[in-house]
Length: 305
Image (cartoon, rainbow, N blue to C red; front, side, top):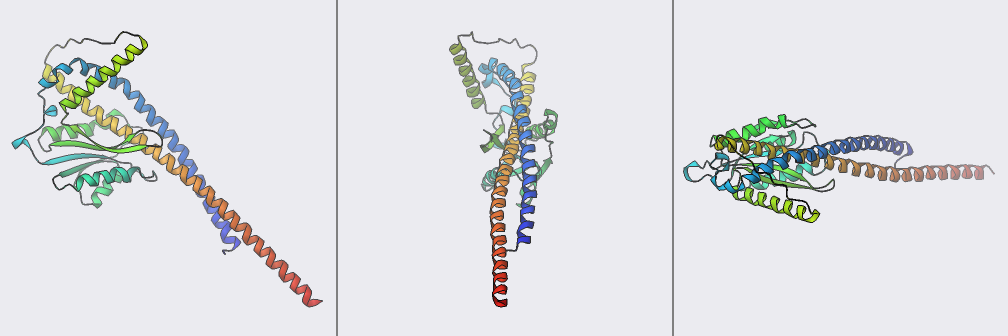
């Protein structure tokens, strides 16, 4: 059994570790609330964007923009651009490992030639270690703004429009709840016309049912479009792409902070259990020392008498 001095030193060390993990848990909880608030705040803009798209849904098939067009034949480059969203720091449980694992499964497909754009240091380090071509690396702040996303979306749109890639995918983590996060890979370019129209129609049905349940008139706005429709569609396509990337990154940010909060909470609880075990061990060692000393005193007294 270890000596009492060594056990006391270990108890002190674990208590200091618990203070650190508890502080990190509180910081992560605060950042998670802010990240979730940012996600909710972006929904109003997204709703207005979808409302405009709904009004032109009947013309989706007529959209002849490069971002809405599936490439065939000679236009195919055989390459995929993957935007990998990870964290800049560790200590966030399996957050990074899960999305990197999903990315590796994509890379193992020999039919795919994949270039990676890394958003976050952890993904950059992992991809370079695997020998994957990392064409660009971005590091974002904790308070992510739409201006920080602009260079990423511009790179994706320009590279796709220049026919360098057939598809642009984003590997990110869906924030479901504070305890549940799901890694996902989603195609953002080209924008799938069929999926877009289905999504718009589903949103219309949801809005119709909600209005019918509460007995309110349906809120539909008829828009009058003037000017060049091609320019309008081009602007909408680019803004939709930028908004999608922004939404995925703030979803990943909320997932990162919630995963770190849970990991630090588990670490704090494990530290508490370790302190209890070490305290019990310390008491046993101290009791053993006391018993030994009493036995030595008793033996000394017996020898004198």
